[in-house]
Length: 512
Image (cartoon, rainbow, N blue to C red; front, side, top):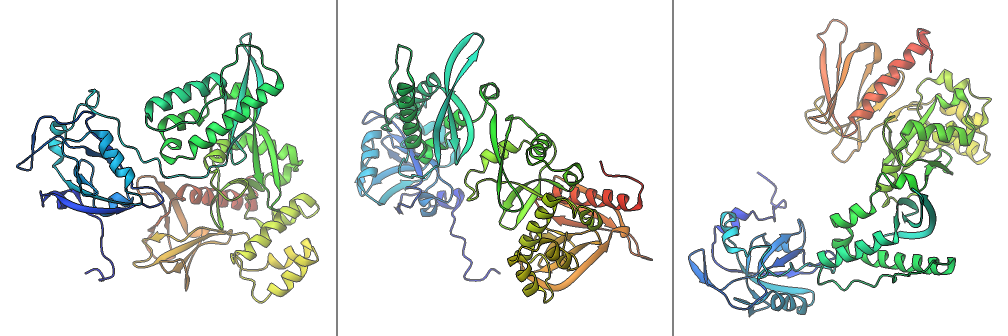
């Protein structure tokens, strides 16, 4: 039995419709508004219809409910018929009357509604294309602050035509470029879709050739329009707006894009690439820009910051710019990072005369010590002193001897290796480790190590979102272990990299 403190506050449609009669609910507006939309007839009166055995004049109905929103929490369901708004009967009332009553109630709204089975929705709802059906009441009250801007514009020549495109950025990241006429078309389309929203004005059309001052004035006007419109969540997240802000094939012809990459020493490198450049292309551009040596280039790769203290390696065919612009909410300047992609210590030591590589190895070692991914074993004071004096090689000499150096640590997750609790997985050149932990990720004392020579095979299970490997102990039957992690592809990449580096050591295969 569940603990008394764990109570399910949600209500299913079946549970509510069992009561069949009207019910009164009070909805308190939250930062997402009331969390529902209303639709219904425009004109007053109309033919009586039977709902759950009772006759009612035409009723406005709830056309959509925000999951987890205020209305959903109060028990409002999609399809509910509205009998009263703030104790005022709205039977046979117009769409405008109901909407006005909802808006007039301030931050608290009392509704008397009646739920109906889904199978009779269509017989009660007016035809959506019929003039008798008014526009949906849409809650525009939820606002958000988006760092969207149009800092500049370019003059483009294509197929013998010259025109100006305005470059749209989100949190400093280039999303797309659009012509004035495309903004004008967006404005008209949004007004048709959200008929009752008071849209700000767009800069007017200009029949003559525009000078720089006039172009910049238009840029500021378009930027202000976009800021105000995207600040309304229901509009900013609409399919129409998302399609407008998404890159198209023609955007690649307008201009190259700048991509910021976080380096191990926390500095930012900016590379100019194509929007469709793959991870491999972007990495080569970064190597060229930073003048990374061929030997050092084999020891690093591009990663995406997934969450605090964890990054996953990008696949070679992924598009970093797409990932870059989709993560505009991150507090960092970029979610793309250059990280160590090497487990073999001897190869790292061989680069000690390469100052750039040493700086990157050192910076990541400091970060991993700060993350507690490396067991400092009483050496923390010495490491801090060397860090303060910027003695990188001396710092590396000590930290390389500590447990956890050069390992990749994954977030805690479930595994069939444990009946209860979770595991933290660690990948290193010596072995693959499963560290027992509690549900909140707090480490426990139990650690299972799997030497690489015990590994038989490994695979990714996309359906089950798991990484699976088979191992065999001496004198025992081979056994499979399943690790249920969303990062199963990256975990498989780590296994493959380890296998490659073990071959380097054997001398059977040299690195590319």
